[in-house]
Length: 135
Figure 1: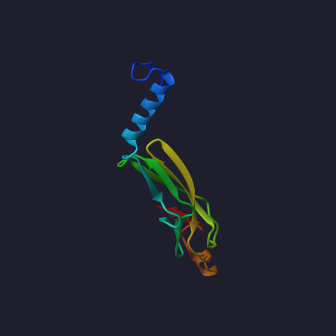
Figure 2: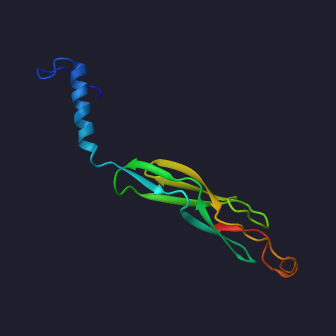
Figure 3: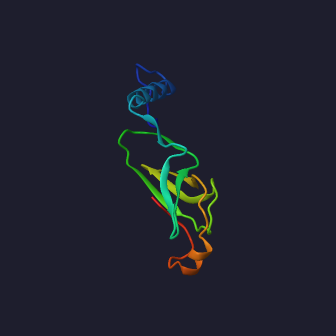
């Protein structure tokens, strides 16, 4: 509220600042929304491997923002290197959630355990022995 000057209606600068602030807040308050962009447990990807279909990659935490309706949201999932077997709740990826200019980072966990490849698959499988997360 820089530059507010005293007037006959508001004889002090502080009174003018308070009045201008109230007007500004009143004009935007009804349009802003507090929204869950991602809820905890939301499925944002799945883990896959050459030997089996894997578990879902779920949000460990949620992302909630206050903003204008219609603000663009982008979610980028980045897989983590994984071993042969996956434990339930194991971090399998990270997600970057961008809402306007606000950026949040969350972890994606395995929704259930994923089995390691069999000895036979390890000896005969042509795919590498690792998992990847796809959104």
